[in-house]
Amino acid sequence: MDSRLIRFRLMGVLLAFLLLGLWAGEACAWWNEEWGARAKITIDTTTSGADIHAGADEVPVLVRLHSGNLDFSRIKEDGSDIRFVAADDKAMLKHHIELIDITDEMALIWVRAPKITAASKADFFWMYYDNRKAPRAEDPKGTYDKNYVTVFHFSETEGMPKDSTGYGNNASAFSGSLGLPAMVGKGVTLGGGADKIVIQSNPSLDISGGFTFSAWVRANTAQADAYLLYREEGDKAITVGIDKTRLYCRLKSGKEDTLMTPVANSEITLGQWHHVAVSSQHQGKLVLYIDGKDIYSIDLSPTLPNLSGEIVIGNDSKGGHGFAGDLDELTISNTARAKPWVQALFSSQSPKPTLLSYGASEAPKGGGMLEVFGYLIIVFKNTTISGWSIIAITLVILGFCVVLFIDKINTIRNIIRANDKFMPLIEESEDYYGFEKQSGEYPSSPVYRIYKQGCRVLNDRMRTIQGKKVLTPKVMSVFRNELEKGALREGQKLNNGLILLTIGITGGPFLGLLGTVWGVMNTFAAMAQVGEANIMAIAPGIASALACTLTGLILAIPALFGYNYLTTKIKDIMADVYLFTDEFAINVEANYTEDAHKYDFIEERRTA
Image 1 (cartoon, rainbow, N blue to C red):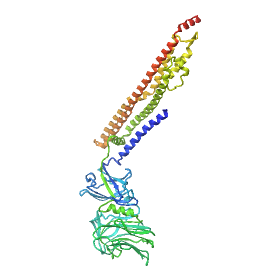
Image 2: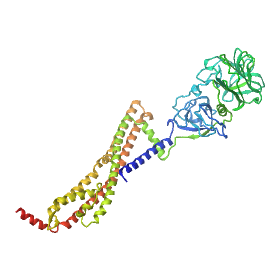
Image 3: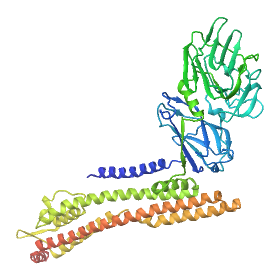
Image 4: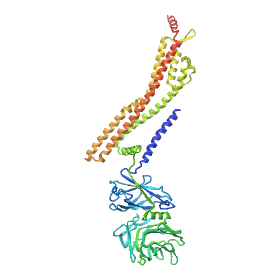
């Protein structure tokens, strides 16, 4: 196994730990730790739910809360701590509260759902709550898209009905009764006669390119051609009405150009709430809906009339077609809404809502590694700059230690592999010195390098007497010294850099202690500044102290284990080196010093 493969494997291990950390962070995903609870709200468009067979985006759905799906003791009295977050646990969803009653434990909240997928239970969003410090974050105007030009909740108890869209198309005239219980919270009651709601003309109310009208309607008696929606200009008009008990829509584009949808199959039950809707597209289809079902559609031969007059709800301009009954959740759009949209409105607002299902309350999840990661995120988020400086120094040293450890492990493995190849070969030879020419090359082996160094000494100082190579005792001493020096140098090479690990072992805890003391000092300074020991004053300093202590131990503990492991391996290698130097010296001495005294005698005579 070469060094590159080893590096790749080590990188793979590090990457696995990184992915584990990311997975843990994702598994612990919690939009904001200041919120103590959340519940999952699933959008069900299957046959067991709303039974919607096409998708729709950004539909304002009604979230009905009661004691069965929310613990009202854990929310603020005005519900301002309630937040809605998309499935990714990042994007906040626009919402506003129509009604909240802590005593009776009920709430009605409108949420702009991000996506509704056909025939699926995969879509969901989160409802977060339980944060007493949370500010109000409602956005009524943002709850509805730009095509909504009028939305009346009729939640007022006096005055004029208010438009919840950003266009501000509030009622300019109103006669009727407000504040009575209705389909969704409170509604409006019209008594026929001259009762009506008037919306003044506004450029945003241009519906010549298409329109959708929807409302909850309860007719208590048969109607004498009562108008739910009426707008006219000259000989052109749009009318949505109820004749006796049948819903209809009439378009008048000229004196003789009139389209009236058939009234067959459009019956509504007296005394009961029904969701009625009319959707029309310019030079397209006009569709009537009752309770989310398309009961009739027709291709438009005339175009939609271009009208700029006032819009009248519950009557005509002159007061001759008054509606006697109740209205709630009346909306007007300047576009033709598709069937899935109308179905989503009905199924989320109906008395037995089928679009949304509510999960059990959840607390921030933890346990094992997941809990550790979650707490670490909180601690590091509250760490001060002074703490981060200590942590940065510690992590830099840790990085160098990791690089050193990887390099040493790679070196030691190569050494062991090379020694395992070279040692058996030379041990099989009776003459170590005579084995030099057939030994091969093992550059990674310290034993081989010492062997080659010893052979160089022998080659330089070996003498031949009477055809036999011999060594004098002085040369043998030099030879032993060279072997010992070679062994010491190899030991130095193997131990080179280990001082960095010892610095990590001894310096890590002291760096952590420095950060801890610094953090405690900051804590007391913050307490003195605010004049009291509240959690917000002491948390950053304590978090810094804990984070510094932790990183100091994260440096020291691996450095200690790594140092002990490396020194043990180095001792084993050096034991083999010293054993080989002794065997090499003994082998040479046994084979080449027998006649050395003769060589010394000849040399003395030559010198004389």
